[in-house]
Image 1 (spheres, rainbow, N blue to C red):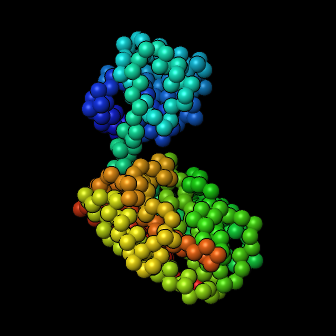
Image 2: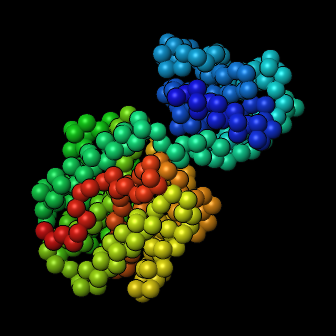
Image 3: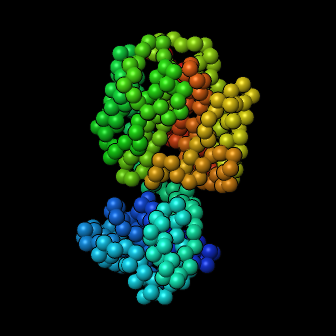
Length: 355
């Protein structure tokens, strides 16, 4: 699989007239080379492939990246890269413009090479998931589903948001997750109107809306779901925006078919929420790619330039947030199958729940 990914990268390099490509991004480096070390870079040319790292990783690299030539940087990364550039007589070198730091850029630039800023070269490859990737994300999703079902039995008034978030995290880890996907969000009452209301010491009360946004990592791949529930009874407007959000999400998902522009999906969910009177309360994009990172290219928003394709995996997560009252977000992970149709990968309940 690594060989196929490198071949695809080299095709992109040819299209962009690049002699080489430097990979700083950790997820991209793993995707291309299999190397999981915390420090190191990959450099791909049309004929060679290098991992530039230090002695701490040499044994690890024998197993993870056996087909790569390992260059000892002796803790001087720029100097090691310049040595490879000189040795292979490289001139036009692609860099990840969001990843390379200024010091490294200036150091390499002084070597009289043409550094070509690029964006999303490897990320576009990562959009399309193979069966192994899909199955890892699906497993992470199953753990999220089981965790939500557990929390429905666990949560009680009087607990703090942090207490519930900690239970979410620990339960998922006990179910086989390697780690949590991000800092778990539990936002109750008026705090549910905060799109990213990280768990606080606030005590959960009766008659409150609660948003849970969480996910897990399994073998480097992530799930990401959001569910909203009620303990007791809440203002009728909150029940109304719940149904509007759910309807918007379902309309979005059912239109997620092969070759549909991603910005159209954002427009479908946003237009429906606007039609129902809450357009200015939908404060973020409709979703994002999902894989080796929780939020990865591409995004569902008005500026999206990609079309959906078979075997993409992403989230669909509209939300409505009423300051001072409460908010709703509903998020699922979705895969486009061989027939170009959307398959929802997360299955825990999302109908109106009052505990």
